[in-house]
Length: 95
Image (cartoon, rainbow, N blue to C red; front, side, top):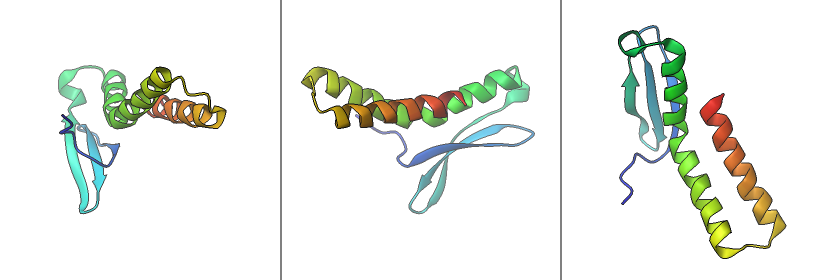
């Protein structure tokens, strides 16, 4: 069951909170808000927001890696493509 919001997720910071949005065909849809001044250290909240925003990319990369493992894919170009996608998802989550 996949009921999460489709589209590319990204975050937007303000002085009050960090909001995660999804780019969809009809515009942008808010996923959630993290109010850093209420829930703790700003750096921790920003790190959490980045992981949330990267969630769809991380899920897709993990699925691809599982498929690669289960199917023992030998195509080096395919392996490199999946590896690059996984690295980009990780980068989005931690930078």
